[in-house]
Length: 455
Image (cartoon, rainbow, N blue to C red):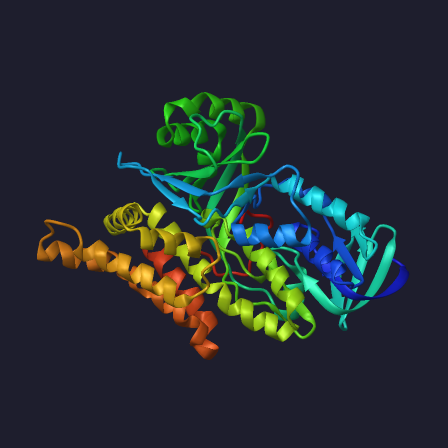
């Protein structure tokens, strides 16, 4: 038992010194609050984690902290199908830009800013716990008792604050995501991330300053042997054009592959009383849509501008479209059955040929469109076109297609979960769970104990 070192009375205590926690501390301090921020494992920022920030998240970051010196501006994504059909550009539109920056560089820059801020006290290496409404910080130098008007839990998907105050939650592990940093991205794609289809899951390549990040997916059910260097190289060589092969081989041999567990836990918990949850502590989903940092920064902006109860109500509703989009697209882009292939083909054709659907999709993907109606409209339309828009299908083939994609029709139900009262949280969990089970994607309902992860 460590001895009590001192007591502090402050306006805000932030638990977690990653991008979301650091930005929250800086935002509240800029507004005149006294802030203590605690980070137990400062070195964790070098793990594989979120690096893509959509335009609204980038706007919030600039408003609170400024422009990171190491970032690269981006305009959206280029989707590269595996069937030889033309590429699809999902542009943010309106001249908007997002930002890509290596995770550890973003964290280091934000920590420098809060360390220099007179309204912030930074406690590195301190483990936080809740006791009788107070935050207890334990470190090698002793114990600090912090009393605060507001407690912000931004301590990630294994949040101790959430578990202590609201109990442990079930999670579903969907995949393993591997990451590499390569120096030669092949032909210049301009200010876009590239999404290559055709592997066990989508392969994403995007600029991060001094290099390019490449991430790829393996099923959660994959054997450990499939994650060894030779197996990874073989998978990537089968998906990516030949001009990438040399850079990928060099990166695997010299760096190794960083791995992160990717899961799903709906963003339905945002705290209680004077405790608010933010970032992955509130919930998370597959990083295919690269929404994690943007959602976390939106959490920060919303909590600074609103009382805790209002913050919780707003974020519970606002996160639904992004959550459902990520899960639905992952199911379609990673599925290998006939039903998934039919929908994937229709999604790609609709993006390619219909500017309105393309615009609505990128708006949902970038966390700018928060209407559940917009989500339901886009994906109901795509589902109907997938079944009835395929030329030359017989009646039996149409019926078989309807059966194979039957879970697709449940996704709009998840969108109305915001109005479903006490059943909302259950519905937001069961809709994806049923679809992942039908597609053979492993999910686990025991309490989450996955640390780290990319979002």
